[in-house]
Length: 50
Image 1 (cartoon, one colour):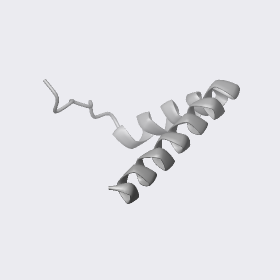
Image 2 (cartoon, helix red, strand yellow):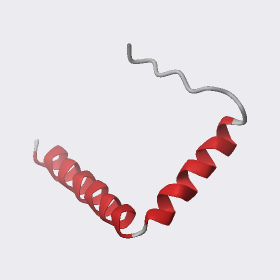
Image 3 (cartoon, rainbow, N blue to C red):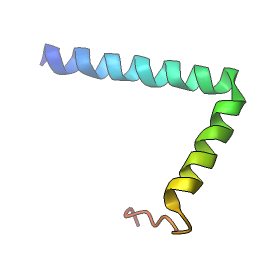
Image 4 (cartoon, one colour):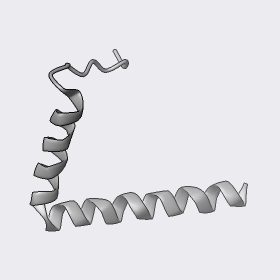
């Protein structure tokens, strides 16, 4: 359906722009890793995908 296609394209544009932002500013990646570790609070992440 056209509405789903438009939504998919918008999501792809947002993900691409986010990737560009992260490539341009590696400090954002470090901040994200730090926040991830704080949120885990010592727990380990186990993926549900085998």
